[in-house]
Image 1 (tube, helix red, strand yellow):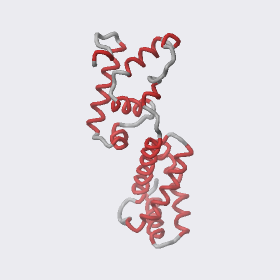
Image 2 (cartoon, one colour; image 1 turned 180 degrees about the vertical axis):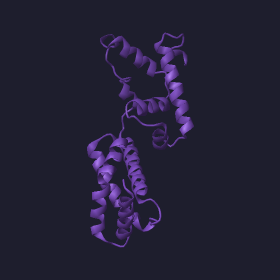
Image 3 (tube, one colour; image 1 turned 90 degrees about the horizontal axis):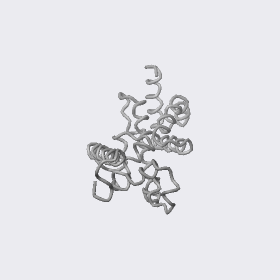
Image 4 (cartoon, rainbow, N blue to C red; image 1 turned 180 degrees about the horizontal axis):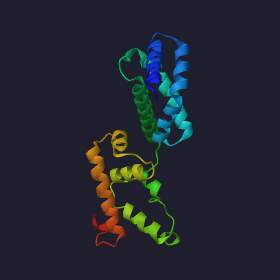
Amino acid sequence: MTDEMRAQINIFIVQISQGNTYALEGLSRLVSARMLSIALSVVKNRATAEDVVQDSFLRIVRSAHLFKPQTNGYAWICKITQNVALNALRAESRRRSENIDDYFNLSSDDDVAEQSSTQAMLKQAMQCLTEFEKRVIYQKYFMDFTVRDSAKSLGKSKSAVQRAIVSAEEKIKIYLTGGTKSPNNGL
């Protein structure tokens, strides 16, 4: 992004704060593709990401009067988009009523003999994890969350999330490598 484009973004935001609806169209042409990219990187779903971009534009219009023209408008927009995307993830997780075990098929009544031995071992290893550890492992390996994203979405500190990931990975590793501990004796 060129300095000229950044300056134009700042001008558009100021114009939006003054009620200029044409400025919103100009801003959209400059940043909507990048906003979609940011949203997709967080929510991992195109339809949800498009909703995030629309909601972000609404937030930009509502908050334009708070923007300080001497600051970086592009960064301001990117941060708004990231926050709206993270809020969308939180809202979706609240709407879900499934048990985290369902993601790992831990609550399944299927006969373990029908499953591959690796899959069965992983299921058993996952049973030794706390609910918090299961959640951070799911976010890390299935949703590609960073530690920071997990901490924000779970309302925990980054260090607490990092400790939970390390602990969970260690428990799984011990169990899968045939360590002496198992989920039944309190890893």
